[in-house]
Structures are given as structure tokens and as C-alpha cells.
View 1 (cartoon, rainbow, N blue to C red):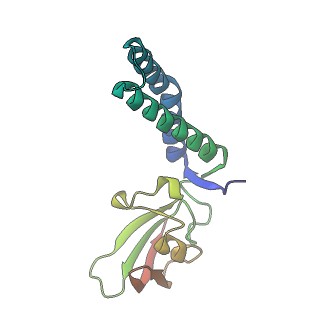
View 2 (cartoon, one colour; view 1 turned 90 degrees about the horizontal axis):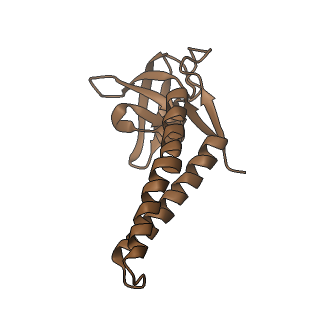
Length: 156
């Protein structure tokens, strides 16, 4: 059985919308492209037909991936009950030792991670290190580029 995927309500809806789009709109577009390419005659050396078949395979693979992701998803609360402990769904303000400014991150499941937008995965080195800690804790993070220490200033 695939592992549980943690998603926020927003992330779940986004993936569900993508799945609906792929099942309806995208499948129809590909079917039309395939039909038009087959009307052209020779399928053996038809580049448009090959491109459409490749896109069809990619789309069907993504549909299967999304179906599994959503079937194993556990929707997390945006406002966890235990505000003082870092968990999936928490927003954490941290400061790296020696840094002048603090940083704010939301801990999300791997499927929603987007570090540029401040959403880090609970499976990332930083996300994993922060889990189950509280404001005031100093946390050692073991990252591929080397270990570093952060202080948790706030958990929301």
C-alpha cells in the first residue's frame, strides 16, 4: 500500500482540480489530435501521431499518479489543535544560528512542497528536524550541504 500523503485542504483541491481537468479536457484534446493524425494516412512515420501518443501516455500516467495520491491523502488542518508543537500544517518562524533575519515556513506534505513560496515538506531535512519541537527550541538540522542549527521563535 502506498504511504499516506499529507495535504492541506487547498492542496487537495488543487490536485483534485488537476485530475478533473486531465480526465475531461486533456483526454478529449489528445483524442482529437490522435483522430486528426490518423486521418493523415501513414501512421508509421507520422510525427504528430507519435507526439500525441507520447502525450497520451504522460497524461494517463499523471492521472494514475493523482488517483493514488488522492486515495492515500490525509487532509491536514490549516490550524492544528496543538499550536505549540510543530506538526504538518504548522507555520513556523525560525532563525538560523548566525543569521540576521528570521524565516517563516509552512510545514506541508511532500506533494505540496514549494520552498520558494515558503512551503517545506515534512520529509525535507529542515521539515523533519522541526517536527515535534516547540517555540524556544534549538534544533540541529542534518542537511546534505552540512549540519546547521536553528532556533524556533514561533509556531502557529
